[in-house]
Image (cartoon, rainbow, N blue to C red):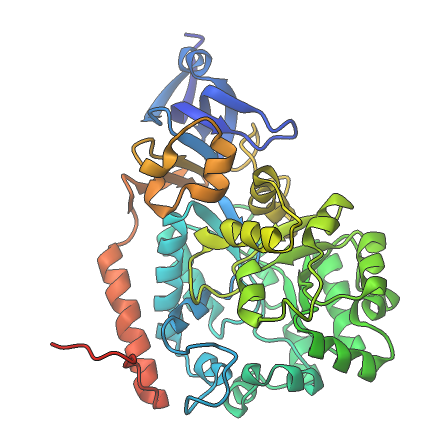
Length: 468
């Protein structure tokens, strides 16, 4: 022994470090002091070097950086089973925008807690919420209670409505009453969540998200970019969601969206474009020239049904050096843990495959970069935050164990997550939360959804009868 001490020593694991050399330690370990990783290497070496307050035996299971969901409307998990399709505007007394607007503070807290527990079970330790919370205070309290990280932004920043004609289910009188399409409101609220960054150890931090898809004026977009740069946080916005939106934008502004943003000085290496499903050749060039990042939401792409009207460019962008990360968008019909598999199948559908290695990069180091936290998160390296996931080697999907990268990206589901640390604290152990009563979280969320449906006149009964 050399007298070194640490708080947590995870040993006897197959450690996928995701460091710059993408090293995998077959008999690996990592030592954690406080909230930081202090050493990564061979188990035998680190066990000799450190006395640990807590020792976690990975039993040969995969150890990896916590996954980061780069785009998740966190409360939309509560929409499961409510609509056959969130884009439907005819078969329900309300549309998706009405459902979003009908949320209470208690509903947001309940939905956020449920989504966070689900994320832990899928190996996620952080998500980026894109400005669709009405009470960031209630949601942040729920996030911290479960023990995850998150970025949050002000509520629905928009000051133009024309492009909603391409996406009618995203607009309603009730939603616009709660989040008015008003420039003065948006300019006043741009920095509303950035006070959270005063505490460098805060689990919930702030950033700038303007809704995008043509709903932002040049004045709002430029002010948002200036605010983000002044506070050293990223600027995110939706763009290229559906082809019809792109057509309306071009008619309004005389240029395609990303070319227009480039001309406004808004598109640069600190800008993150979400979706990018429908970009033309000039926009593809603007992406490459600006150095902006893209968040791809493959399950949302499938749900839009635009495959025949939109070119698949994600694999090509990646090969051209564009930095891509992965987002869930809304976990309506799956979980965040399904995102890499959805991306894999989308790429295979277009005969333009993306490797398992690239998928893991999108869900870790690239997503950390999209959050503006690449120096802090995304890999297991000394000095980085100790956001760590330990997978159980007892899960059937952990075998055959000849290719751990393929397993982790494509076959290891939520049932394989055994232990999760966030900021050096064990928040999930033995396949259960250490912070919250999971059955109570689930019951509260179900009660919340039933109450909201009753308030809004939505019948939650399915097509098939349920007999008591």
